[in-house]
Length: 460
Image 1: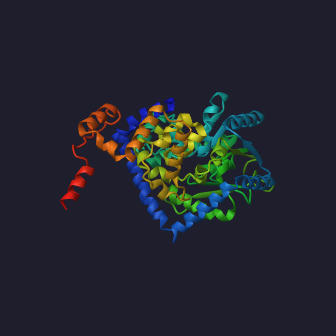
Image 2: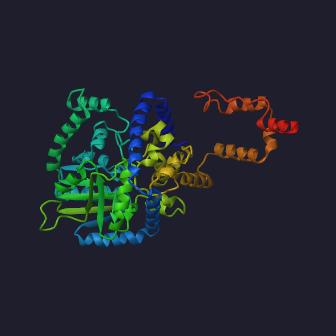
Image 3: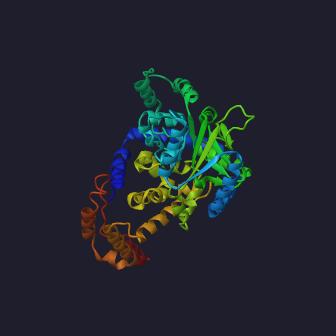
């Protein structure tokens, strides 16, 4: 058992029975449900929109190299610089060189899961460079020394009272401050940081091949400010975020906003194509785009699981997942949590360490039903399970148990051979620790359903 699996079990054991946590999550997600239902009504044919998006992303993933090459050529025309990065170490090393070259003292960041994936903030803690998150949710979890709880909503696990207490503790603001008052306080504090920053770092929701653009969608305007004031703009984005054309932006932007927050369209949607030109007033003097692999090409080689690279990070699969709602985002121990994270994390961070995530799913299929780009998420989890078992990543005890179960299911006489006393003894002996402490132990009746069914048929 890996250390990551042990931590997963410890965290899930604790959080699953935390009634206060469950209350907060269910409240926040219930608001999401109602918003998404309203957002879906903007479509005259939602299934058609999802089908088009699915086909576009599937075609892109199948021809990823050519689309990325097209993007690079078009982006270079705008004066920007492309840096291909195999892993997080390459990103950190090359960003450090930019920092040293320009004597950088402060960095501001807009919300970016890709930078979380490569531990960007932690990597510069010893470099005497101030790094500040400017998305309100990200700023809140950064203040509390936490990782984001959710792909879209980093502080979903906190109530307004929790946040007021945090700001009281950190800044001595009134303990009864309202969300509006806290937002005003943060806005004033961050405006000064925007003016002082040397580098602005963003992610990218989409990479647009035909125009060489980085599309960024947001609601607060912090990404635009991160681009406008600093002299240097750095984009760190996964290679799978590509879409073929600017003509596809309206389809993907609206699906992302509908399934991400329930909005018809997010407040700010920006396309960035390079540093500012001579006749432009604002914008960065230099723009770097890091195209990050970080084991994505490893997933690309998998016949079935490569479809997971179509994900647009809307977070819908998390919000509809019964497992996520009970164990919470931090239990997964990875940047990408929930159903989609359970597919990709073992491949991104190591199967031996994270294979348990692919087995931590009820396979209800709700994630697949809600996915706006029609990824068969629960089926991909099954493909992961198949591959991990075939490659002997499972324990010997698991293999023996499943082999015995398979044989029993294939041969009815093996089930009928043992009487109820033996079966109940086996259950109490083998599953008492894993089942008993949480629920009443199962009790097998003397007569099985199979026997009772045969008896009833004889009476007719």
